Length: 234
Image (cartoon, rainbow, N blue to C red; front, side):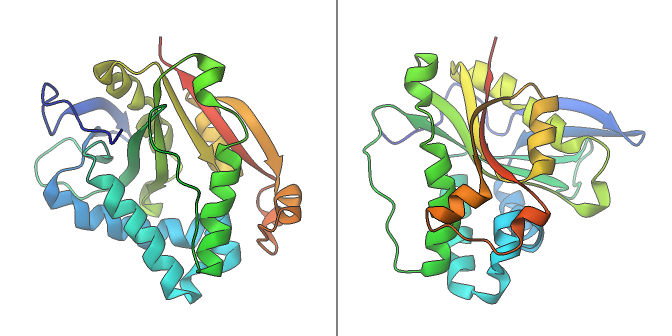
């Protein structure tokens, strides 16, 4: 089953408001006008900073970059992805989370690609995501997940990542979804997720991932584990 955003939920909706550095900010649905700046923020900083991307050197591999960008653009079409902006008209995008819903009835399609770099990057995430069956673990038919979270470096260090994750609560409630689960690949994002209330469901070391063929040279200097983490919506 392909997810479709219910027409009963207005788009765009503002899901969360907060203050950081004395500035009022909001987390809202990504509008058509915000798609390109949001994708470019992901391309520039997620590809640069996310540990597997960083240590495999994705910026040297245009084909792998194209695969990842296509994943983001295709997922954004679900109209669930969110951005963080200043709480005033015309504000630039300072944070992005690419969201979608996974359903138990989705057709199972094994991940396959001829691109060796993309095979390692997405294959590692796919491997970790299969470390636990979210549907069985929580007794649910669907859950909210993500394919990338990034905050502009100029705004890092003031809790924006946590606030973006907290916006998933009202989104899930509006969708009637009880769980959100995501693979967090970096120690920093894992710590932020924990502060937002996410719990570890499955953990694997990058050493063990390397043993499965997912090698990211030097990554353990930065991050020891990849984790599937989940938050129950009460």
